[in-house]
Image (cartoon, rainbow, N blue to C red; front, top):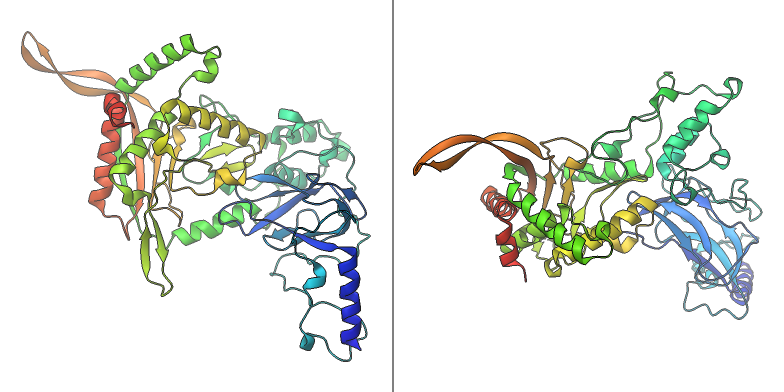
Length: 486
């Protein structure tokens, strides 16, 4: 009898075309995301490409859109819950004229016969196990998971939302000063200051965001000349407290813990930039004359650093490889043909590492154009999953913020990472001819320090040193870089 009831229920679902819409893979290595906000609630009609919700991973904030026309029947998570990749986000009842396109149907995911007891009076499906710490989805389809949302969508990053929660601030009443009305941390702090004294709730000191403590970050949101102070003046000292890690912190905790198993070989060296400074100046003068938009055509130093890394990787391809294991668990090296060089960026949403694809086939101008595109996407929080996948090598320019020497930390998908410090004007000895005789003189030079880390399980120190030396030559003598370009 129970099996018959179960089959009737499955047949009903099949007629209704009720499908589970799963959270797709939005980035390499991402297994979970935090639900930032819902744009729909049970009973809402949706069409293809309508926004369903906004989720945040350790690398980006992404808006999830619908693939179907239909009606939202159930939402599986609340705001701020952790959603698992590959698990259902919502159940959608398709319109009669909407094909299911082979999508997974709840009616086809019936339980085995022996999973239903003969004493069960109601047909049910087995509930999936839920990891500890994740809120179980509710079965009440009438629950409004939008948290009293209004017609106005609140655009804010997870870090901003955390600050708002710590200060008991409703973001619906905060005016955003960012692009497109996006709310920034400064807007929250300003709102806290402007609130009447009687309405302010006691607050405690904000924990340091660990996403700012990692290796190299190319600052795309602040000027490199000055480090703006945070709104710490609005935070009052209070009692110690324990808070859960944010999604970005959880993934960093996991990846950096894994990196502890990788023995790092570190190498640092100085590079003179004077010749590159002159070459870049001449190139930009030409671009300014040839381009109708001089600012867009201007080259920064990063395209030179990225291209030099690619040319050096062509000579030492092991540094572009990845450690993998075969079916028997034996370690092997995967040599990758594409030079997808990641650039760490400090965005309003936190640290992200998009990569420039196929640098080995790109010119300096093409690399500069791709970098500008990625930076703009990072500022607006619209970095795509494709831009975050497939990185083979990482460069970070901490000199945009400050600092000279670094010890960058590897991720398990790469065997080498580089960090670039700030440029300094320092005295150096130089031999010149005076009246036909060599004379040593102290002259000013523009110096930066590159810091490298390699996986010492597969990369020996001599290889790392030779790579770094070739990289130094390509930067100090730009004509060598131009001669080796294809």
